Length: 342
Image 1: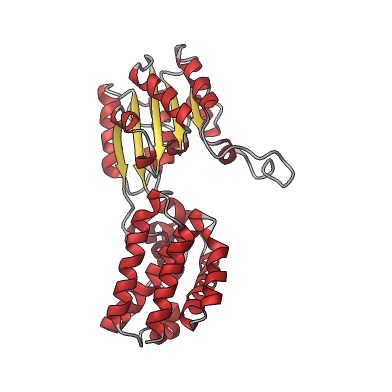
Image 2: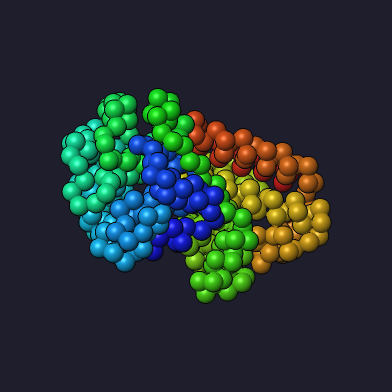
């Protein structure tokens, strides 16, 4: 498996291949963009290509070097991430010592000591720092010194979905490569090729918002189950019971990922309502299998929903600034309550 495993990022792959062909590799890269869109996978396959024994601009996937990198045992390729994210599920069981959710200075110093030596058996030492935005201040400052004086035959790849959390001085010393989401049709086609039926592929692709990694790791039943849960949340808002709204919000607001997912789902649902209200068409709906409920929601004036959609968009943009998730969710749900009772 090489660059052909990367779907939807042809321009990026072409750029990396040219760098390999001309032997003009940067000492540091920043792969940034939404979560679950292929940044980490691209970084790993880039590391394979740099060290492949048979290819120059790609990874063969078959040589001993490619196989070792795939298994995570190549001595010259390291992946760094918060300890909690590197643990398997067994070691994260209840009763075990809690692991850090940040990247510590000790982890950076460990790779710095390795950078001081030439590659052990490969062509390049490659250090992939996944979720690099989770470095604490000490770790970030330590890494900055390394980027200012890069080691020969070493390449550092920072992977981040929140590059604005990185020190500007770190970002400026990296060759920046932005990853974008794939077209929904591309994701749907890929899922169908993987054996997913057309209806489920359509729903998964839409729910993933073009994030291929997310789409490949989600099944239709899981989406339907979450949709019921989130529709109940919307119904709690529409019912007009403020007490129910505050109790419902409290459950989700503590988890940033869950809160973001809820806002995404609210947006998709209300977007479906607006589209159906304005066009009467169902082919553009993500939740076309819930047409009965969409029709009920469509009885309300479209302009009121557009105001809520704008609120959701503003909140999503502010997520990177560490806003109060509970207040944000309460705001949107109270807006839905007001709209439903006018």
